[in-house]
Length: 365
Image (cartoon, rainbow, N blue to C red; front, side):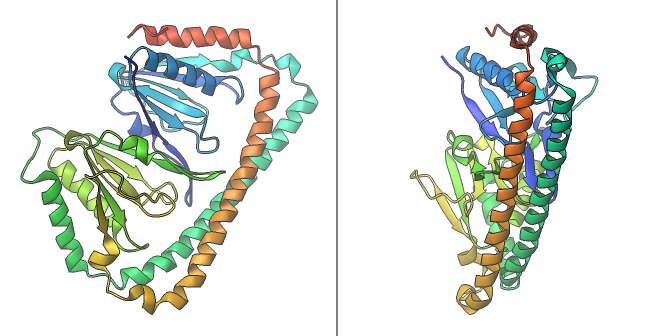
């Protein structure tokens, strides 16, 4: 029997700069394996190989993707073994405590420095400076887009019935949990289900909700209360002792986009662009926040004012994505220099060490 994979991000390129959620996402582990070394020396490939081996041995895994190269992996967790493996050069905020055994594997040892000329080193340094410049430009554009988004939200916030919003929260809490409580401290994990990437928004909502019996798809305009609703539901779940996975917005991490309640097999998520979905199962439900909470006719009343706001927002988002694509290309050029100077017989040995480290808890070959 093969295992399954759940897909996440815990690093995001956001309107507030690079944002990490590894401290929360990797809580509760007993062992951490941290891979160190330059980009292009095989760390992501090693994580992918370990993930494939674990799945083939029947272990379920959690895979954490790179927001710059979403086909690449930054980290993984094997929950059944309470083991995490992460590229320490890109995964900031990894938990460290006396209760977590931490092992370091230096992939930098695979680099043959004699193959890096002084000229090459200078080229890499220049590319790294350019990379940081384009990251900075992307973050500036995302922040500008967020400010435009705030303008957009204001129209709907001012048209909201807050009494109905309170009623809706109580209705959903009752629908999800009834009178049930759990006599334990809730586990609350903070994660991303998606990210802004060089190819646009990428999300793993369908993967993460595939095995859940109930999905509530939130519809509505910016400012119609979706994130606030999710925050209040998360607090209610935690107060009742229910575990909750809290998914932050990959554009604005101060906002929430999804909650998963594993113990009751339910999820509720923002199902609007850029992660818009529609019911696919009989058990799927739509909750339209605009219809429930916003004064009827608001769209029509402010259509003329809203149209240029939408256009400015779209323009800034496209601009930010273009800067991320420039960053991706620069990152690829940097990696190629290091890959060409890497001794892959050493990488193979490090991969074996990684498997052996995990083999201390399970037989994965």
